[in-house]
Image (cartoon, helix red, strand yellow):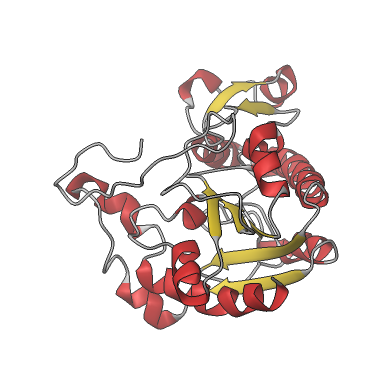
Length: 275
């Protein structure tokens, strides 16, 4: 939902649709009859709790028309399985593809919701056979499930993790090649892409993505922009964010306005150069 409790600090995200898609993106809705830059990504691109997310800051600073197709907890399935969203993205003059985690996609081990990709739907017989002692009906979200499976058995978890990484790379390539325009690959996190030896740390986003996986994709895109939140931006935390009191824990785990400003400052000039 875009907002549930107006007047308590929550934002109105002006939810809107593009084409025949059922997905509600952050508005206000942009005019697609003029050249535009499209941004694809997860919660960071959507700008949850942030009055002016980085696409809006870039538009204000550069004059580029930014169409924000970020979605909270989006995985790659949101874009690859929605032809209307892909059509909107493919009509852009320039596309920004944020690197999202590898956990929120349907694979041979488990299925996720078509739009709310962080929602775990069901485990395959293959995964149930690997983890016979686990009751998968207890899980509603992919991160919770993966954290539990890793705690039960790190060795068995790595079998699942390798499947997710391989599926993620393949689908990222598919998404990038489906966009006929110039593409910018965007990394947004508190740290640079980890080495393969640290990629199974489930406490850091994007989940299960490492430097080698990013390097493979860099060869497929026009430009790569890596934004690592600065110490100053991290210290500012939730300052300037708008959220209801009960959303405070969630807000603390997301980039605040200072990080969005940093993203805009690094990404904006690259978009101007390429547009």
